[in-house]
Image (tube, rainbow, N blue to C red; front, side):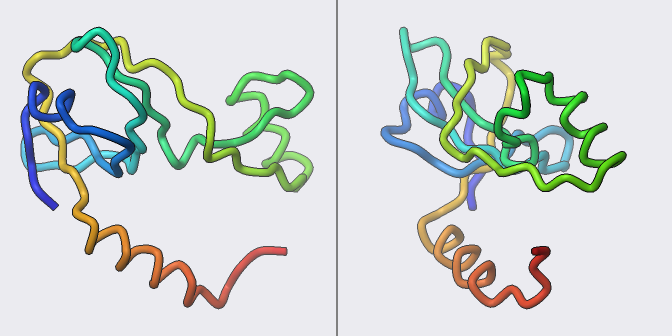
Length: 114
């Protein structure tokens, strides 16, 4: 993992796994899609990758899961626009070895909810 500035981040080609970095804190795990216009990018926060549930908003979906125990499928292919334009934002970008290590660890999970 390495920490890079916004200009370097926008120049990255292809999808990357990253977190926003601020004051020594690494944020939520996100996936960067493409960069467009050299000033913005698409991304997806992994923890909020809940698929569609009757057209409900995310907070409504989470409330239904809490109330009913319904299992909502995750959608890891939906990207939204970042549109924050924070030129001072730093990014903790995962290396290929980091990603392979995470995949290997996920494969070894034993306590998976059915």
